[in-house]
Image (cartoon, rainbow, N blue to C red):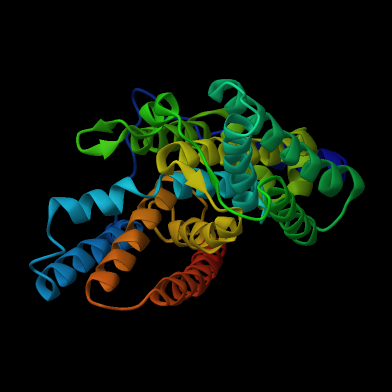
Length: 351
């Protein structure tokens, strides 16, 4: 067997799940050390959730008249829809070992386009939404062309594209905020269901589908394989570049939809504010690697991280901290998340 054939066989074996025990076979008994390791692993997977619960209790005790109220819960869970779509968009790229720092700018361009096309050009709101999302998809394809076809560094490329899109958004909005009065779009984006905007449930649905794809489909396994070792994935006959292109396009698609929902909910948008979504999105995606599947980017972990961070921000603001606390909190969370992610990956490699 040649070295390439050996590597290919190994790669294929990694993509093939282990067979279940036969009818007459019994699994080996679990040793006490294995049980302790399992409990430690379970504790690690849910550690952020435990901290989140502790955060709720702490803020409830420190601000008993304001924090433990229905209004606060609605603020926490009903105001993060755009961030959910942007973070899940970033997750598409991170899952396959790529970087996409243009996600917030793509959402900002989408939101700006919808408002301008409807308010200034008189376009039907649904046609404007389709155009905005199509432009977002085009940006994803452009990123993929520069990074995968030409071979430009993804960090430099997506940062440059983000700056370009911010400038374009500012130009088409004439350097100011844009406004949108569309009851039909507002109804689709912000109708209350169980006290929360319906777009909150859109985010849950997208995260659930994303989780299913990542954990239960060949595509998801291939995405994780590409993200962990691109060269070995090629030897296993995985279409690496096709998956990378799909990740960038999917990333921009989600961000485009997030931008449409954002402007539909708020009724306007300031293109200069688009960059303010980037740090929270990165913080959530990296912090999400500390929960559910430690050391691995995963949609469920990112969702938990988004609302954990929102809880912290809202709680601190209710305690009287100024607006600067958002940057401090998100920045600290990102640093801690990267450290934890690195440690978890290292531990997984050595286990």
